[in-house]
Length: 110
Length: 113
Image (tube, rainbow over all chains, first blue to last red):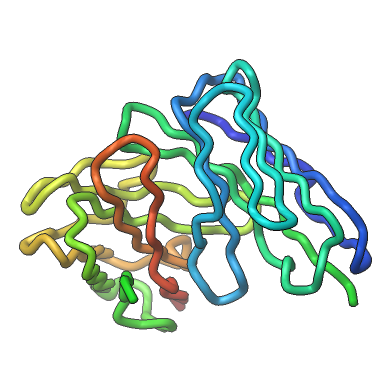
């Protein structure tokens, strides 16, 4: 089993603050995805990164894939209450299967 | 709006019962998956299927079986429910190809008493 570790596990911040969430592994992945899950719902795909060193931006969210394709980070600028949720990373192996991290639970306080 | 639909949001079953969790997708995806989600353990893969009538074991298949008689439908079966199978069950589908994302259902919260 591939192990993806996310940190921090829990994060509670004030509206307007910046934050970074990390996803780390000793394994190399051909791509990596980030999902957000709201309470009572399934995860929803935010982004896929494929190339080592790749950076993608989605409004206030910035995603980076590590040069060695073993790790990734998610940076949120000026967090808003609507960003509250569980953030999951998922690393791709063998072309069709992903292994999910344990998640970072983010709470943004108004 | 494309979607994955799980038949029940909440289920309460007794120990020893046979439990069926149904999942239907309308995106013509080849691949379908069943995960369970537990606090601190993340999403763990139970079974997946590449095609009709095909199934592959995931990381935690013990106590579960699956059925895929039609491309759009993937069923998870708990042969004899036990309390340690109390969990959130998530169904997902995905198209073949590198980088494509999962589309998840809303989940079924199963409690075995």
